[in-house]
Length: 157
Ligand SMILES: [Fe+2]
Image 1: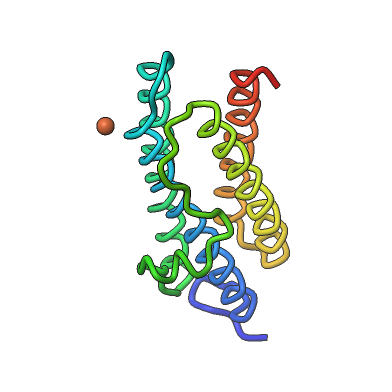
Image 2: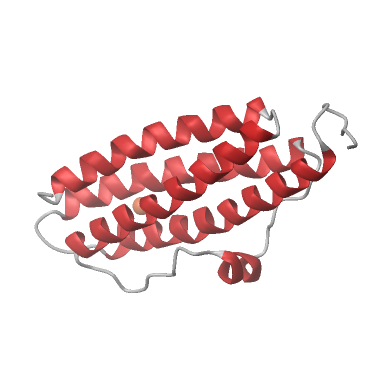
């Protein structure tokens, strides 16, 4: 089995890069959904949620860049076309959501998908001895599990 320039198995690294690109597509669609919530939200909780959603999409944007640069670090090319994101994302596009509760529920649902994908990636990266990807996924999972708890508490769940 061949090793690449950072000592990782070439085939496993390609598999990891594909999985990271798949994750990236989901983040990009999720990111744009959350921007939509930030813009379109209406009602009593406008000021609270408008700010909360901005905080969330800024965090997603940071992670989008980290995931893409991890793909590059592994020697592959990050997906960078909307057509690819739409084709690959399991998180669906959400349009015209103005109800805060619906937005919050969509966010919890999207996080559940991301967390599941990141757990799969964590195991794949562990198997490839790719500590960099393991650390990244591990951070995302623990942060987002906590976020889900807080969003669900807000929803009274
Ligand atoms: Fe804004």
